[in-house]
Amino acid sequence: MPPHDEQYLVEEKSWSELLSHARLWRNISKKRMNMTLHHFSLYIDHSGTERMLALGGSGQSPQETIYTAPLTRSPLVSSVAKLTLSPYLDTKPSKSGPPPAELAALCERQRTTVSSGISSYDFDPTSSTLLYSDSTNLYRIQKEEKSVIGSGIKGCPLHAQLCPVDNTLVAFVANSNVHIDWKGKVIYSSSTGDNIINGCSSFIAQEELDRFTGMWWSPGPRKMLLYEQVDETAVTSLQFTIPGCSPARPMKYPVAGTANAISTLRLIVIDENKIIDEKLAVELKTVYPWYEYLARVGWLSDGSAIWALLLSRLQDRYALVLIPLNLFGSRDNQSSAQVVTLLQEQSEIWFNVDNLTRFLTPVGGILQFIHASDRDDYTHLFHYTAKLDEAHVTATCSSRPVTAGNWSVLKEPGLFVDEKRKA
Image 1 (cartoon, one colour):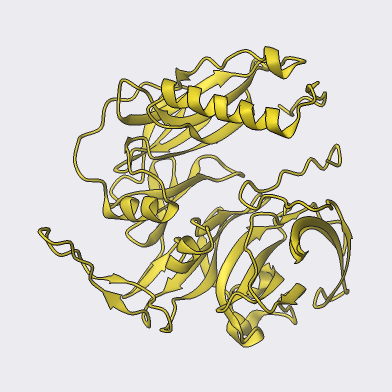
Image 2 (spheres, rainbow, N blue to C red):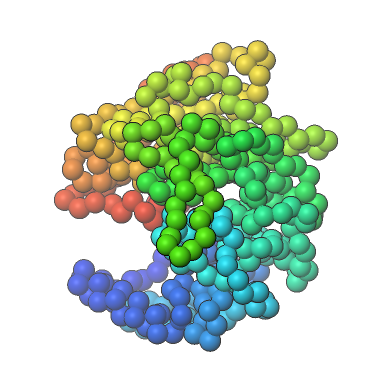
């Protein structure tokens, strides 16, 4: 069901009033909840009610679960009704014990608290399909029927995602490999070797660039999963110890001045009778010799190509590039397709990596996208139009400002673009 087109009537508030309102709500939420709500999802249920999902813990239990609440429209901020939270599903308390090492490491890099109970979820509102993990097992609920996902796969399931094209397909990461489940049966698992990690972002991407996802489903129409493969062979191994505790197992840690992990992309294509896992045939380091970090990755909204933000080691140079799908597979079977450079910039200092890049639906050989820049001291949004040549090898870009002023757009929340209303 599409969202409502009408707008809220919001009472004008000064900055100080908005700040006071935010502080008040933060204090109220801390008192009512043992942990602050996070991982919000907004959707419209089958009755037409606007609802919210979020992860959080109650004051009665240290375990996190999924909460839901109906959203009430009101013309004035001062008269907005309080949200009435209720558990979305009944879950049994999980067994006490130390969290899996993979989950603990991820939470440490996200600067979040390691908690028990439900650790992550994904939700498809069109079919009311819920996918969630309790850090040990992965479950799928649809029409009140609960099934186990990834049965037989050992390890902590991370980054589980429903396929947008077919919600019976689920991708997740466990034991450094990507696994794809179909109706409770694992139909594909990637292969790995020593120091190879599939489906997870590299240490630097997590620690410095705030990217924690290493795989991305295509929005359609084909069933395709893009994932990152990280080679840590050249990275230094270190062992961290705490006095009085047993030594921790050695871990790969990119010490300053030493070699970093090498990231590349692979594409899984799921057809009716076969599954193909293809590597990117072009070495990005060859095209962009200064490339070191895979900062951001995503799909065009029609699934026709992939975009990526490449960053140098000093983080003073970046390129926003377009990767055609026919660059995956054997180079011998490819046409003249090339990686297309949409933007490329260099600075005397460093670039702030953000979540402010959003591609609009492509039309013909024209790409439009929103991208942020802080070249004028403040971070602002720009609307770019890129015209590709007939061979889709080169692009000519023009831009116009979307925001301006002596203030900066926040980089963390990301962007939402309503193409229907052009907002």
